Amino acid sequence: MMGNRDRGRLVWNHSTHVSGLIPVLERLLARETAVRTVTPGVIGRSKGRVPKLQLRVSVPIRGGFKVIARSGKTVQEVFVLTELSQQALEAALARSLDS
Image (tube, rainbow, N blue to C red; front, side, top):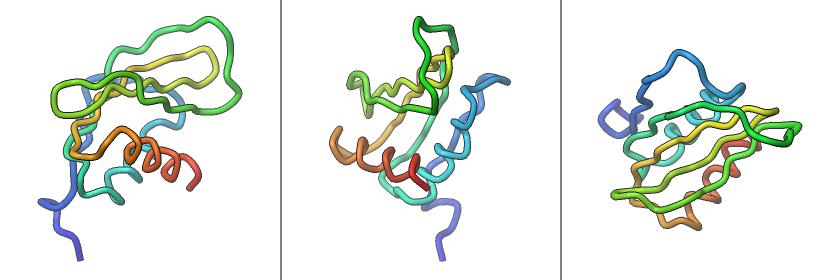
């Protein structure tokens, strides 16, 4: 059984999030011990519309990656501190979205 020390943490900086994002991030944290911290960031509006939640690894940051979450016309930055490679993080995000 995993203790809380084995799991990463989800930081709540904002009261609003892209629709469906939080459950996906919680599944990512539950499955990937290499993910230390997930912090949803700035939320905004985008041009165009996507029918369902999409997560795309954007750029490397110190200690991890910036991920862009899109749903409908809403976009949100998500900062993931992890030891995973970009390809491993993309695969983990895809598994979390599919569940």
